[in-house]
Image 1: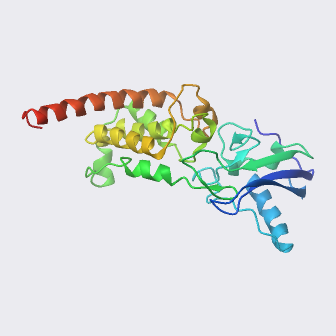
Image 2: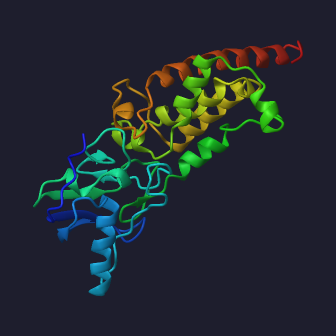
Image 3: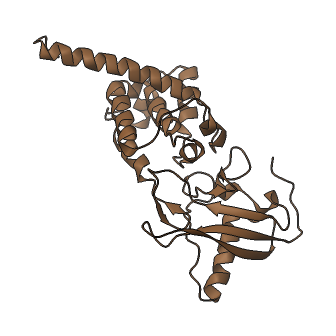
Length: 269
């Protein structure tokens, strides 16, 4: 739970991962950040530190951000060894300086995973998620206008589950938290939110097979069912979706194998 609002200024020491480029040797560098408003976000604190670095003629700390409202997932940081910081259900941009004690030492580093290579400082390349999404995270059915699409009956339970899965912002915290760098929670959420709706049924098998294959090709590890992923997820997406995806994948694999055998024996599609 976030600490109550305070007006007392605080000072912290930052241990920040600095790395000039993908092939460069990285290291931790310490910076002092003084007289901080405890109600500023962690990203606003980094803005203040960067302003000071630029005034001194030093290279500012590179970090990724966009909406700063916990929606886009761009602000992915390891804060004191935890994806997105000390609180549950929030992104890095929603972590405030009042979460830390005056005089605290805060360690900031990028997400660590082979499929997420570090580009510079706190920025890693998460385009592997884009490739997984492109492999099947869409539908090609003509849904018509909003009225036509909304006319398709969807049971409330299915709609609620689909909405729960669709909350995934693709930040990669699940990968960073997992000792195997597994992307199963991300893929399960993307597979499930379409597979639970009638519009996603036509490509259901092709979707799960394509996205899982692309996930494996990207180098993500296997799930070992320890659920660090759901604990670190800023949208608190349940690991139950992984079991749902596994069932879909098994069923799709069997149907795909049967169809291939039928075609090979001359039985047609």
